[in-house]
Length: 504
Image (cartoon, rainbow, N blue to C red; front, side, top):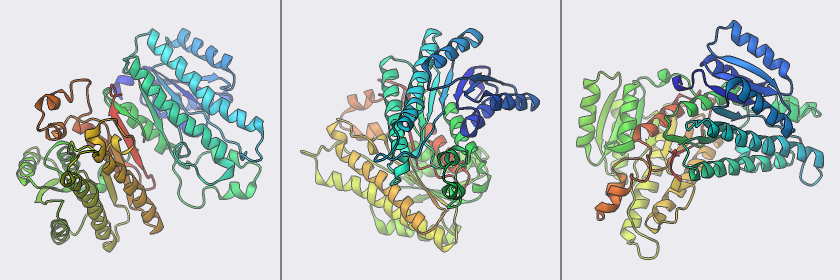
């Protein structure tokens, strides 16, 4: 976070909850934070606490009603005059009223739109203009969204609020596209938490004491600091990495425990395996070409990493080899605590004239092998009463959007399947009342051997795959894996979408 030290961040809704926690953490990390809210007294108190704690940054309270555009514009003018401008804009302010679609009050709907959509959009626009006029090309706009921005919950009181959060999802993606069209490296990120233990749901049900009293009783919700950790992770990403979604506790609880990484001989798998060994895990790295993993294992040992990399030869298209591998892990290492399904492949076989054999090969590795490894990893955890394990599927942006490239269409279908399998896995784990977590990490283009293998019959295409813009690097995805593993046990990071800042 050193590059943000001394720079200016605006945090809306900074008087309580996520906004307050974010503002204080950024001040602790040395930023100059303008915290705005209608109740500025609470922010003044936070500012005094930051000063007393000796934090290197400063919190500047600013009274602003985000339903009033004139006040927002006046706030940006004051920031320009006093602090030159904004480098980071965190649109955190949001509200909800229990106003169903069939009987809700128009005034409640308008208030939600004014804050959650218009206030956010105006702040994003003004933040961009502030960055542009000062030639700030590494700024960041972060929208605190909600899981409700991706899924309609069957809860009538939340339906209009959910519509505003779906709008935030679209606005964030639209902002990324406009920034890309402007050839800027300013980044836009949406962070979508589910229930967070703040005043937000208590305000929602302020007129219903029974519901209000039970809001946090069904399960342990997120805490504001968990969302703050996601903000810090996003801001800490290298300038070429664009995060779309998203918690930092130490990796100490994983030290000495066993992780399986499939496809560990090269690219993302190799980077993940080495990083986990560096952090003290015992990593079983499997691939058909075990020689490369043996070389990586020797390098890890020479580097003095506290963990160990155990090479294992396995053809994931053969179930009997997968089962033999899990049996060997059980015998030699007791079992698997973390399973990282990284292995994947693609063949340029369009839907209209592709070869069935290639389609089957993609399904065998990308879908069936992933499912078999997941099942066996869960069974390994269950029989040892491991309730804090983690299954991470290395997915792809192709698992969320169909790119108009025929050569990729069948591969894309396998990655859409991975998206569904990860969510299905979460649901089954929840039904089992297990705290084992499941996460999908979906990178865009990553500079690995993937393109050269995909275009092995077309060297020119392979050579040009990474020339249009700076892609992600394997270590960027490995960092996403460790970020997910670091999350406290009560935090479920469902999906991480990431791509190169310049990628369309």
